[in-house]
Image 1 (cartoon, rainbow, N blue to C red):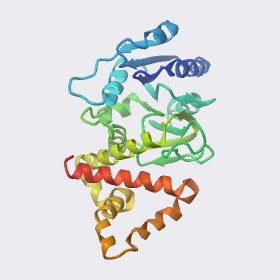
Image 2 (tube, rainbow, N blue to C red):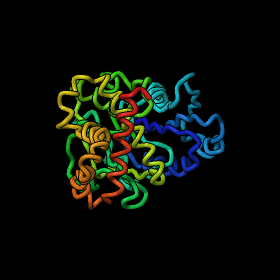
Image 3 (cartoon, rainbow, N blue to C red):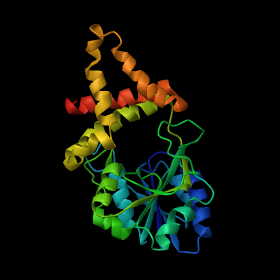
Length: 291
């Protein structure tokens, strides 16, 4: 049994996601089920009714005091799932042809326990978070998101599920604990999901929250700090640059240090990437200051 868990909150394009996912699920030789963990408080019931019989609908009540319920929703979905293999994607995602079969194939064969597909923006270059090209070779990852992920229940139980104290960053925390438990995360770039990352301002707000979340992650996983400059330099370099901005009064060329990452990221839009990274660094500083 393969359980496909889709989390949702007021995302009307859930209808298109369910239609595409159901089509690919029916094409698999293995038994499948689709579960929607919906926090829309009944506002998407008309979509539930359109997919009656093919989808298990789980109305979700946010935990009191929880600002963002994503890890709660994911845990609830896994608890309700019947399958030994669990697949995650989100409402509003567009799954490309062959996505599901390519994502679960290494798990069904018994070769792997955790597989991550590639997530791209709806249009080329739309997202600051677009991942490697679908033509890239398979490889193992040190961390991953959960928007396009499949794993065995054994791996989920070993990691202990999602830490519900996190808002942003729960996916990275989960993947780090998977790796710490001895599991490898196989990247399968041919399993592609497309997602609307929102406009540039929305992406910048997300980058700020990612920066805050990164600090919380390292507070929990303190052993990873000794390798942070090698594995995650952005969490150090950009906050330090921002702290050093007053040096511009003495050294007017200080901001020219940004030319180095600008040149490295010129193919992705240097200005856009730099603003994103600076917002990330600002988030790091805000969390360190307790704000």
